[in-house]
Image 1 (cartoon, one colour):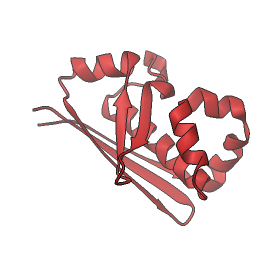
Image 2 (tube, helix red, strand yellow; image 1 turned 90 degrees about the horizontal axis):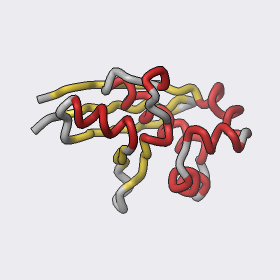
Image 3 (cartoon, helix red, strand yellow; image 1 turned 90 degrees about the vertical axis):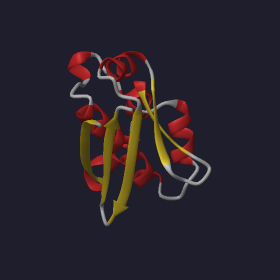
Amino acid sequence: MILGIGVDLVSLENFAPKLKSDAFRRKVFTPAEIESCEAIAKSTEAYAGKFAAKEAFMKAIAKGIRQEVWFTQIEVLNHESGAPYIQINGKAKRIFSILGAENIFLSISHTDGMAVAMVVLESA
C-alpha cells in the first residue's frame, strides 16, 4: 500500500549560487553525498537532484524542518548501477517507522536547467 508520495523540482540557476557556501553544503548534505557529487563533472546537477530527493522525501512523510527533520537525516546515495536510493536516520527514520512504511522508491531526473525527484513510500 502506498503511504506517501512526494515530488520536488529544483532550478539549477537558482540552486547553483547556494553551493558556493561550504556551510550550506555541510548543513544540507552528508560527507558521502558531498564526496559523490564532487566526483562528477556535473556536480551542480547531482547536488540539485539529491536536494530535490530530500525535499520529496519530507513531503512524502508530511514533515519537515519545523518538525525537526533535518536534511542530513535523509541521505541520497547511489547503488553501483547508478540507481539512487535513500538512507534515513534520526527523526526522519522514526517518522518513517511510525507511518508503517517499509520501502522507499526514488527517481531523480535532470534536464535543461532543472532537477526533479519523486519519492513513494510503501508498506508491505
